[in-house]
Length: 386
Ligand code: KG4
Ligand code: ZN
Image (tube, rainbow, N blue to C red; front, top):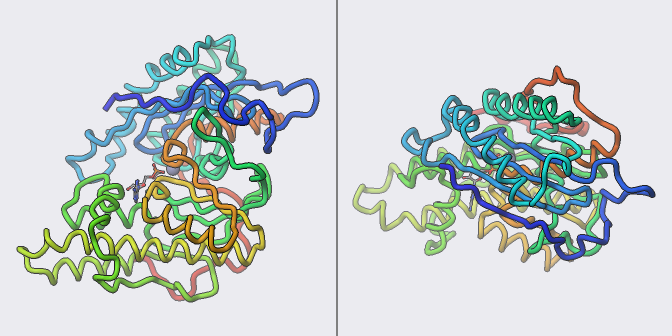
């Protein structure tokens, strides 16, 4: 419930004054120096204040896990109702926490796509109302763009590694998305591949539910898997040797269901760590296989893991191992910028505002809006939805 989690600080983080990275302004300073950002696309309400160089001046979030837990998943109506309760108090807290007033804010950024329509609507309507009341320009941005640009955020505890720049391959993995992109610059996103059925986070959550681990499941599977054997169960790795960048997790889910059903009730608890470790390993194998293939094929030498699933400890460890072995520059933003947060949305927005973009007052939510252009031939042959 309402338990705002602070991240970032009003002080400049390491390298924050350098002004390097894609937000560099050329002479005269940027028109938009600080924006207030709102993120309500799913179940977390988040508000941030972001500077033009990616510095996070405030980043607060109010989760709703307790409200959805009795239903075993996110209930859209409950999510939007909770956003209406949490949002304005968070706006006040973010400004106060950063010791700023509305005079210090040059614009308002909001996630307007994609996501749950009712949740997006709360954010968009609130942002438009604040923009009108405070006489500020505002801009709607795509949530996925925020995830892909999260590595450029900076605070007291994090800064993008030296030399990290465009182009890079980004894998956005969350409860709603598993999408592999080539990123060549702001607004230059090419979809290399995506899931044909469940998202990676959804695969974690569905397994957690069937294994009786509760909601939300990803972090619980991760925790349980630490004491398990990842080779105990031979779960499928869909399309892993195929030469494209698509993903499928529905076969894995079915295999896990069968494995669970085959276990006598009394043996389940004892085998749970092995089941979790094996299931997680299958997901990690597939994610890293696709990422490694894409980085090689694109010849970019830089990779980003982002989205809630990149909080997974096994994925992080294996990805770092791969990066060390191959010399690829891998950036996995800190968890506070991987899970849904307004900071990443604000950063994408302030870059665009400084490029001269704003949204019309008629802007509405776009629950299904895709991000980027699809590369020719992006398809998964012979795979059907489960
Ligand atoms: O990006 P995010 O916070 O929200 C969405 O846009 O969906 O991602 C949430 C997803 C959930 O499916 C959750 O189970 C998963 O990220 N997740 C994890 C872990 N922490 C969160 N999955 C695996 N391991 C984790 N440690
Ligand atoms: Zn997300």
